[in-house]
Image (cartoon, rainbow, N blue to C red; front, side, top):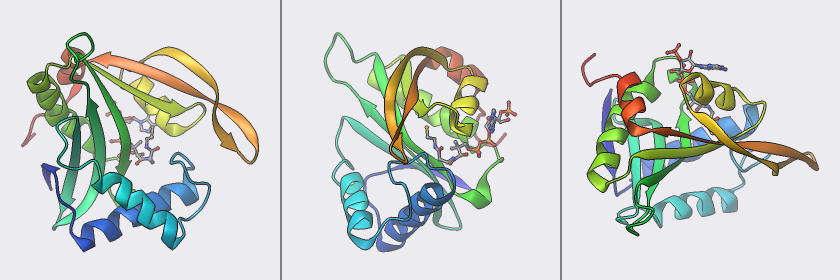
Length: 180
Ligand SMILES: CC(C)(COP(=O)(O)OP(=O)(O)OC[C@H]1O[C@@H](n2cnc3c(N)ncnc32)[C@H](O)[C@@H]1OP(=O)(O)O)[C@@H](O)C(=O)NCCC(=O)NCCS
């Protein structure tokens, strides 16, 4: 398995990203889609990601196994001096076959490294309340600073979202270094 920041996606990568989003949409409901993406939605999902690649405000980080993307996360940075200490993580997905392998902790090593390079010392993220993702981030040490009622609409019902933060100093300590 290898980890890298990418600013280009080849057609195989694009297919894999749609596959990963689809499995989450079907089973976990934690992406913005209620069910499998149709062709138009898939194209717009990919275009949305491609539009961010290479921008200095964004970092798209992936893990590959035998060339195939099996994990990705988007880290968004701020440039203004008063808030460049804040970075925001989104689109974290581990391909179902690769869950439980501590990929998140391994990725955190590189994410913290990049945050420090960019002058960011706090990582923010959010998750739908009641999902395994919410429990996982909290178990990893993320601290809830707020709850947004109506964060997601699920079958027409409002579901809250938990907004969380943790320092890169802390996350570095729980991260797993390359090769370990
Ligand atoms: C969220 C996700 C990225 C985590 O990846 P993963 O491979 O399943 O995570 P791991 O199994 O390596 O677990 C990481 C840590 O969280 C813990 N954890 C895993 N599932 C958990 C759960 N349901 N509740 C509490 N903790 C959990 C693990 O025990 C582990 O901690 P430990 O090393 O101290 O034991 C992955 O499950 C995923 O892609 N889910 C669908 C997409 C999604 O929900 N993304 C997040 C949107 S906010």
